[in-house]
Length: 426
Image (cartoon, rainbow, N blue to C red; front, side):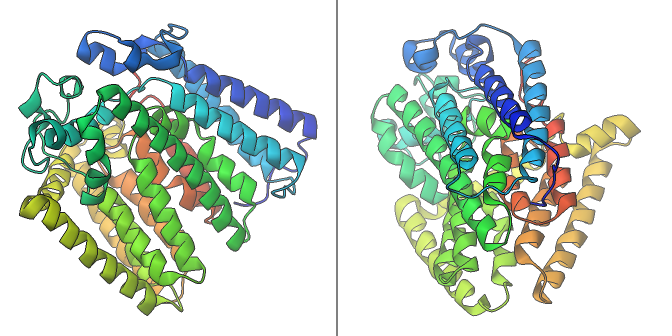
């Protein structure tokens, strides 16, 4: 990230950090009103609400006000960090890493906030573990009286849209209690976000970017904590694997890097947006492609052996999802502002995005910065898609943080603001 924020005294930076930490802590404990599984299930058992119970009991409007304030303080705080020479071992850097760790832990202990997706993950595992059904052939409705499936709404009649690696990793959770599965997945999302922060810092170091600032840009982003950790979304695991792949390509292990990028896509297909740019990286193309090919063959064989040909149904579900529209997507917002039909806006956005990706690939092939190009391609995808949810921001945050591109960083901050109200029941 660019150096900036000169003139911020230490006391101001510390005060901003304390204020940010306090605002974010408030967002972890709203109570049952913002835990949609309570509404979907009709009750709030202890295994669902965890150690915070009913929390502070405030509703969506107040929550949104706090969230917007946290986003504003986060943006200023990260900007101010750019004006200080922070090294991994100094006191300010240690304090920041402690803040990141404490907040990730706090949201890991929070009940599943703003989303029911974690119950769809559990339901697909329980299809196999409880009913011996293939999650790529059967939907959660097939076990409608199950304590996890009864809390699924959007994916109740949909087979799994997730990759075979993620499904295999979650299968052991399908035969135990729903509470154990829920808090295990919460823990995995928290650990994955911690890994994302560390990997972002390591990548930043290799690219001459202030590493602590880059980590704070990602891990202290309020939407990362509120939605990715708070909602236990598998996007965290996907991005952690993808960033490990990016680091591998940038370092001395490009074959491993290529393999890890494929593994990320085998958790959730969205990670595939990184892959073509990594494959065009100068000096390591053949080795990256070899790693990708080997991993793709392995994932394909394992997926077919475990789930049969129906494993490809996940791709069909992803295609169906792209025909839906969310209120806070950029195309939907433009449609409301201009009065132009959403289908026309969506078609134009996808066409522009297609041309932009082709240009970025050509630029990368000619020696351009592939990490920066991948960041722009991911940002463009989030802008062009008509189906946008706030936890998707984690796809672009690390790449923007290490991009050395002020415009991409600024665009990511604006997209964070646009998505603040998305998913908050007001």
